[in-house]
Length: 58
Image 1 (cartoon, one colour):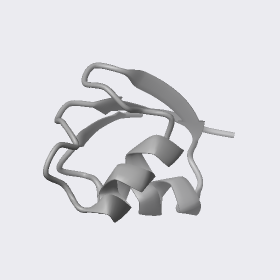
Image 2 (cartoon, rainbow, N blue to C red; image 1 turned 180 degrees about the horizontal axis):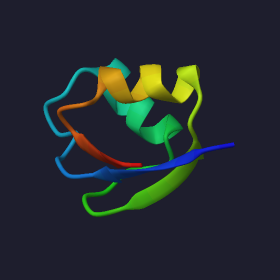
Image 3 (tube, helix red, strand yellow; image 1 turned 180 degrees about the vertical axis):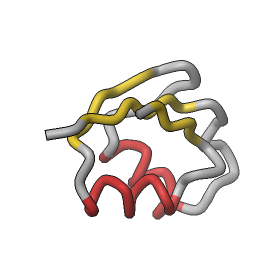
């Protein structure tokens, strides 16, 4: 299965609670942290919710 890397590039300070929860669920939490995930529709949906806070590498 294909994988993608997600890197947090912006802070969650002053963001809605649901965006903070998505960042936590993606395994991020601080700027510069990178996590690798399987490329599934569920992960893509989570990334779409916080696309302004993360950078995606395929």
